[in-house]
Length: 122
Image 1 (cartoon, rainbow, N blue to C red):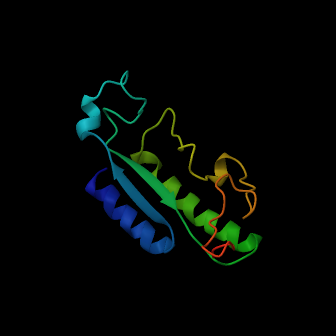
Image 2 (cartoon, helix red, strand yellow; image 1 turned 45 degrees about the horizontal axis):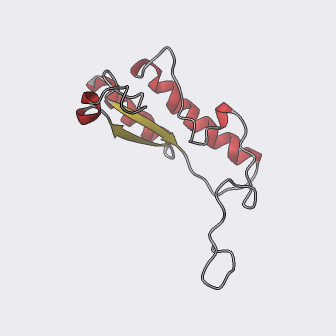
């Protein structure tokens, strides 16, 4: 990503306020391990993985739409700077653009934490 692209990114993040980007560096040792040894697709040519996120506590469809719009605007800004063909999302992250995630507190795949008294931890 060029310096101009990074400067534009910082301006976009200041404008949008809430979205967060996390960069996970790749390369190094993983570039030297054969793809036949371990199934890790992020090898040569991938400098880092970018995680896009936005968090909110407000309830309701309007809050959801507003916050999803923020992250989609940031995602769109990044389009010229990221890999293509395909531009993809990691399966184990909740990405509402990949489909709905109808998981309530008692319907999750990981059991809720129970405290030492046997009640639901908050």
